[in-house]
Length: 228
Image 1 (cartoon, helix red, strand yellow):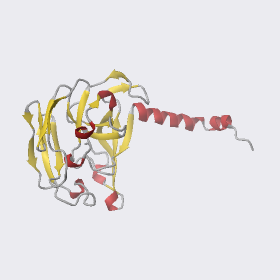
Image 2: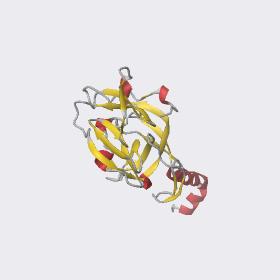
Image 3: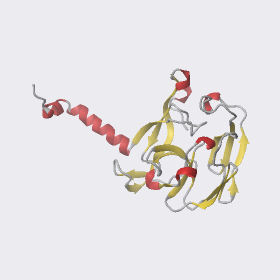
Image 4: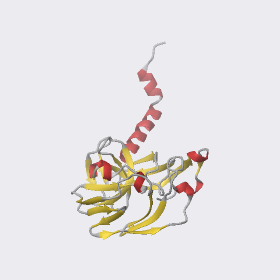
């Protein structure tokens, strides 16, 4: 029996059109993304499936980084996905500094345009929102980081080797600084460099769902559809 590609395509035209449509939607409109690491704890957890709005900032030519139209400017504090300038891997981090900002870090504390962020200790927190013990069994501290529109929790690991300070830099036009909320467990702009706007692939505002791999992959019910 000969294999007839045309007949197969004709018989499954509807399904093939659906697949093409899904690929185009994920490339140009919205995507979903599995958080693979603990670099954004305590706000994004391993096992979170997040929704990425690809039209939050720019309309792009599908399957490329070519910007066709600006929609809105990224804001400090946004959680974004982007293509790493180091190796092309897609990452999710928090946007910390904008073009023109002068930013530095002094012993884990951010300073932006001469203003130092404040850090309020958080003593009560869900253990599920800390870096898993299997990955880091030592002390973790949680703080509320506050500086203008930056209002979110961060984790620091006093006993882990990490880049806790860097000298002041001015962010060039069209580029952004990204940091992980799990400050001492994130490969971000401190290591891979600043991120050009065209490499930003979207903004994350909500979760689809979350599965806890440390608890038999049971769903975290409170994270279904939750905002971030």
